[in-house]
Length: 89
Image (cartoon, rainbow, N blue to C red; front, side, top):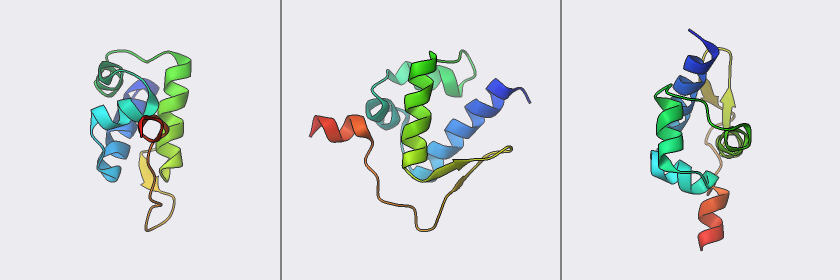
């Protein structure tokens, strides 16, 4: 599996663990939903700044990225509302 394919799978898995839709992650990271869809579909890697924000939001929500996938840092995971969602309130 290539690094990009692993990253795509990790982002999909992280969203699944958190119960987040692509739209929710996109809003929280202040990127377009198509950016998330393209990343998860292994169509293209987003710009470095966008990828940093996406990964930071998932990590802040309690996700650990491992060599083979993702896992919660602790259980139960912390209640976390992504930055872009909090700013809209």
